[in-house]
Image (tube, rainbow, N blue to C red; front, side):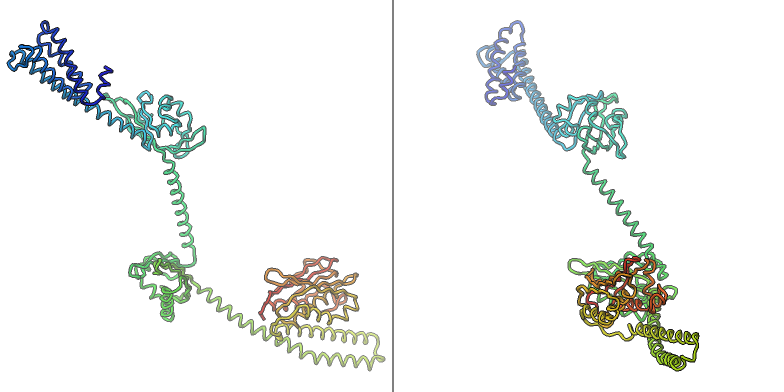
Length: 630
């Protein structure tokens, strides 16, 4: 038989030769058994035909049928050794039956072999598809035994080859993994689709997470199980289809998170729009460039009294509600904006539904396509009626305050100037009274005159300081550039007598070129250094003047080693007429530091002090670099 199978794979011509040669031993056997068997000579022929057709092909069977019929007619049928067409009826029937059966057998064998080839081809194709399909496919019998694994199913199960997976029990395979459902809860094995399909005898599908206990790798699996039933309705085997949906699951999670974020963002925007004291709106442009109503926030009703439905259903309201005096200008600005810049602020008035006049500010932003054609306009409209009223009130109050300050400054100057003359007269007559009648007055009268003269002197000093305070703003000079060193030197020269009397040591560091009123800076340095000399301790006064840049300002410092003060008093010392000591201890009107504060503030800066009792005081003031304010 093996030899015949080998012959079936050789050249077709050889197959036909072999088919003819097979007739010879059959004829020999038929000749041997002819007398005892009778028509059995053709049975040997049919056997040879079957062999030839099965191991060759249908044509070989036909060749064998024809060859055996001819040889039988020549060598076995009467008359022998010649081809005879005048056979007996019996031989003719046998020969006809043989030829018919031979041809039928050959044809049937051909059809059978063709069907086997088709089945083998389809089986090969199916196996190829199943082994290389992206989904994992397994087939298990009703008792759980693995019948088939493709490459993907083996890989998803942690095996290198399908054969390794087929030879491993299911319980051992599943012991490598931990299963969780889509909510993260443990998933029992009997809830897997293959067990459910086997139990319920119907298709079952489930998506679950599978974590490898070896590598901690996480894979999401979509598992579909379909049972194949026997004629009696029992399950014959279950086909399982596995799909790795990890990427899809990640995309779903990302999409879900994105949707949640968008929803949260929309809710946030809605909350902002609902609580924002202004109208948020959007206008779209159609293909002809005509604006069409888009979104508008519900604050519209609170601001103008119109509902969103009223506004969107009647586009002309946007123009009709504009104040007649502002309508043309506002519309023209918007038209110019459409062809120009991408952002704009328009001020105008609108008439509310109840007739109120509402002051509006609209901030507009336009979106254009690549050709610069407007596609959409976004805007925020604010009700600035209260702010405009406040600005108007503030401007009026500022004007009133400015006039009041000017009047106060004029009054202070005039009052202090006019008080000088009667004060000089009082002082002069008191001194004259003391000189002429001193010998005639008792000690009490002389003390009284002394008190009056001393009070007049203090009043004169107070009037002079008040006059100087009023002149800081009223008789100030224009700002110009000058060296601060020069102003400090002039202040020291003005205090030369006090410095010599106290033996004070004044050190001036490197000071910058500044912009301001030089005479006022002389006064500033003079007041601060004089203050340091006045409030000296038992030690020799040591005063240091320095400056350094800080951010966009010049920071000046005047440091002394005097008596110092408690920190709680640092906020009071710059207030006019505020004194921390009585006149018997320290002379003065309490206006010097107030003048310093007014000078520094006029130059756009501020002044403060840092002090410790017994350790001295440092006065700081800063002014903008290259300031030109007056």
